Amino acid sequence: MRVPLVAALASFLLVSGASAAAAQPEVRQVSGAEAAASDQLRAVTEGRARPSAPFAKETCTVNLLLCGQVVSSELASTDCPSSSGPEFVDGWFYAITSRQAIGLAVSSPDFAPLTGIADPSGRVLAADDAPVGGIASVGVFASQLGIWDSPVTSVRGTPATTGKYLIALACGSYPCRNDLTTVCLGRGRYRVQVGWMNQFTGKYGFGLAIPSSDQAGFFAFSDLSNVELLVKVLDFGDVVKVFYGELTNLHFMVTVTDMLTNKSRTYTNTPGDCGGIDQSAFPGSSGASVIEKATAGACRPSSDTLCLLKGRFALKVAWRNQFDGSSGAGAPKPLSDLTGAFSFTDRSNLELLFKMIDFGDRVAVFYGTLSNLEYTATITDTRTGQVKTYTNPANNYCGGLDNTAFPE
Image 1 (tube, rainbow, N blue to C red):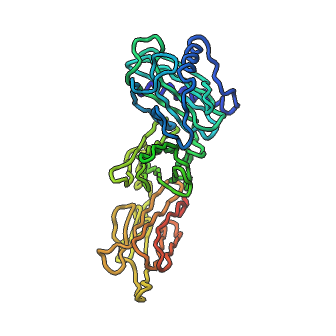
Image 2: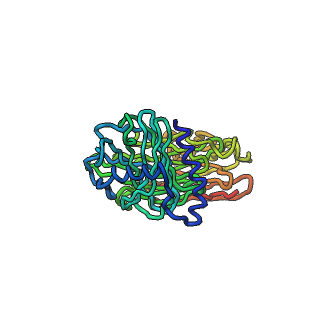
Image 3: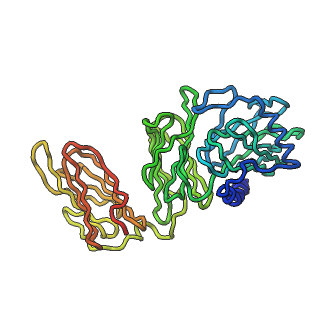
C-alpha cells in the first residue's frame, strides 16, 4: 500500500506546482461526496482542542507529522472520541512555515478512512474519504503559516470504526527552500525536518532550522541558542549518506526527503543518544564512487607526506610544542583513500585526522584535532599546483571544514 499512497501525493504536487506559482486560491473546490466528507469532518473536529507551539499536553495524544513521512498507525477505541458520533479520531499536526502546496493521503485495510486538511485556525479546507483499501487524499496550497492539522477517522455508517492505517504527507516541490523548520541540502535536493518530544514534560514541537552549509545544518528545539541536532548529507557518487549527531537525550525524529524522487528516510534516537550514519540512504548522483571520480596525481607517500584521492593531494604537517619548544614534522598514517591521520612524537598517539571528498565541482577538506599544540597543515594539489594551508594557534583545540578548498 505504500507505493500507491506516495504516488497519489506525487501526482498532486506535480499539478499543484503551477498553482503555487500563480497564487491560486488556497481552498480546493469540493462537490458531491467530497462535500459530505467535509461536513462529517467538521462535525467530528468541532470544538476539539488544538495544541500551540511548543505543544501543551492534551487529553488526546498529539501526533507529529513531517513533510515526506509515510507513517503506519492505528485508530483505536482509546483514541479521541468524536464530538458528534460513534467515531474515534487521531489528530496529526505538522508545521507549515513557508507558502507551498501540501498534500495528505490515508489508506486503511480495516476501515473506510476519512481525512482532511485544517488550517492553523482549525478551519477545514478540504476533505476526502475512501472505501476500505482505498486512498483518501486531499491537497491545498498553504498561504497561512503555522501548525496545520489533519484528523483521521472512519466514515460514518460503515461497519468498522478502528484499525490500522497509513498516513503520508507531501509538501512543496523541487528545489527545496529553507524556512523556519526546514534545512535544504545538496543544492536544494534534500529537505530535512525534525519533530521532537520532551519525555520529561510532555511538550512537543518542531525543530527550528539553522542552515550551515550545502552539506550540513543544525536544529534547535525551543531555544535557537541551544543546538540539539546536526544533520549532514553527502553524495559519494554511487550513494548518498546521511549523518546525524545528537546533543540531546530528548526524543526526536529526523526526516530527510529526496525532492526529486519523493523518497524519504526517518531517523530517531540511537542507543546511547550518540547519533548515527545511514550508509545507503539514497542512490547517488552518478554510477561512480567518489574515489573513482578523483583524477590520479603525482603524490608519493613518505615519512612526512600523506597522499589522498588517488595520489592527487599531498598533505604535510609541521608542529610545535609550545610547552617545551620542541617541533617537527607530522608522521602520516593512511586510513583510506579519503582519510588519514598524523602523529607528532609517538606514532601510537594520533593528533590530527584529515578527510578529503571530491564532490565533482569542488574538493572539500575536513579536519579534526586531538591536540592543542601549534601546527600548520599544507595540502598541495599535485595536478594543478594549488596549495592550501590550515594553521592551529598554540592552545587552540578545534578542527575545521573548508567546503570549497579546491574548486574544480
